Length: 215
Image (cartoon, rainbow, N blue to C red):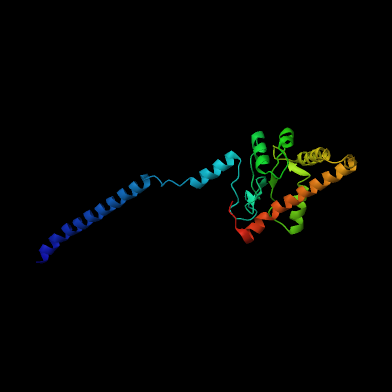
């Protein structure tokens, strides 16, 4: 009996070694397969969209409603010239400037902005205190952007208001056609435009708090 058991021991050891070797081969094969498998592709959606926006030079509208403008105030008053806060837009073409002036019928024509290569849109500040934003909105009657995006004197506004006041003087009696009267009407027109810009500046805050108008 003992001699039979001794004879069986080498066979058992050989079978065990063979099984262990087979397991090792399988493990090595799995490892080699894992090494040769390519990595899963990484989604490029957000990167592609970001690069596309960067190439076009146009930033998307603000993600939050802070400083976001609507096309009309209270759904009535044209507000097409107002640009949402922190939004960068490409220069307007001559056709776009005429279109904006026609849509925003409360404002002067687009002839001067086209001739002087100036942007006739109002760019919302959208942050800061009441005094800071009010002062900013009134200074936009004197400062604007040219088609290259640089800040320049707002000749379109100042000359436009002066031209309108001079033409309006033709409808007044002769005693009201003096330079003093024309200057007063010119100054009044600039102040009214400053008030209009202030309304545009704070309209997003009022809209978000009360009306919740989307567009």
